[in-house]
Length: 551
Image 1: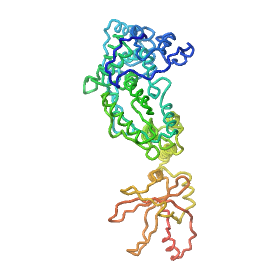
Image 2: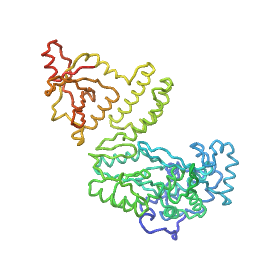
Image 3: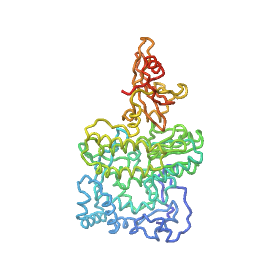
């Protein structure tokens, strides 16, 4: 690294100017540097180079990097990184194992091509993967193994240079940082009274980054022509999709490329520093970001600035996914969590993603033993729980109950018994309530809620849990005798009785002619089994009070 007063900036606007928030430039001891930069490739970066990097200014540029990129030890370490990560073959069909079988010859050939400037980057193989919780799919570009090796070698040289400039509030795809640290920072801000949140989503961010502006940002720190040419070749290699052929990449950095996360962070680095300068608390993980504010007015100003910056940077803000919310009432989703008030729990898409992983393992027709299924499911559950273990207590009960029901249904299928089966608690209650029970309801004005078009006064948490219990047959199905004044007869209506957090809830459906179908949910004040007298007048009186019968 060397300072250069003649280093050029591609543009003078705020979207491409170099980082302005720099840390102290005091020299550090060698031992401390090794600790802080333990993640770098030490065959490339020596302690002396790291010391000079830490004391460099934002305008310092790097030159003489090409020899480090194509060095034998760097290329060897790069392939080992590719080998550890495995991955699918690229357009040439060569797998990691096939490359490894001829490792010495393949690396020597690759280094020779790079040294003689004969290296030609192949197009990436495009594959589409589903987005969890949606019907959309996300494109991935799978480079060939040899191209991945070159990308890793390039990244091992460039990443420390750009990492030194990255802002504190950026957490995505950075050494020693991740989702946990980003979530912790969000919780710290919420506890400090930041009650308003700006959720912003860039539409197809990775696929729309302008190449010229991105290369201009790279040139602000790297002036080695061979390295810049290799970077440009990587960006413009194109993609090859089955039945469609080769397609050029006029913009963007492909998801699936090794160096793509580093370039994505680099392009948003200017925004990170500008938000700090303006005093706004932003937390960003790659292209997912939230800005936490104390007032709505402050949130509106931050939203306006972000939209203006995105336009200037050639990016598009997703209008339907960008909004301002009050944390206490509405809450927001970030990195798999749903934050509301001072609590957090897994968001809906996180639950759906877990179920998508476990559903094939727990099909009722699965022929494996229960022990084998549990052994396969446990690593998924441990990983999921490891991330979401700090959830509010109600956030983990849903997936636990869902999995238990799936396993019960599997065992019942093998016993040629239908359904999911009642829980042991419900079995005991059903035995104790044989015959008729009297259900005394709470005051209609306080606890009775109706789900209709206006969605008036519905406790969604209770409603969803009770409805789920009914759908999964974890409730008692009752028939309620109601007196019909028009006909003078007693009518039986279907009711369901379900438990939630120590309370009993009755759910009834009203399908009277001429009325919109509604569902009534009411909490029970008491649940007792009356003593039968056998007298018709007593049965009639009990029916008017709300007699229920188990079918």
